[in-house]
Length: 72
Image (cartoon, rainbow, N blue to C red; front, top):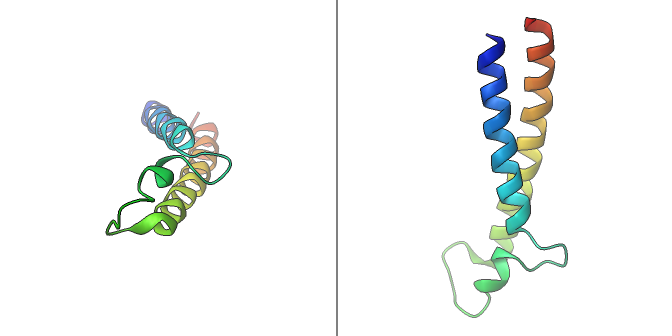
């Protein structure tokens, strides 16, 4: 069971790194490349999604860490 939690934490950490690298601290990043065209999600929805995904992955990593420590 511990191995499963470790694998899930590694996947969450890699996804977190990718999402953080996509974001830009000044509001650019992935959203800035779509500013000139009218996309389905739009600029604001893209940044909302990236922010929610970051918080969700952070919470998942905390929960998985607690579960892994209790499964040992």
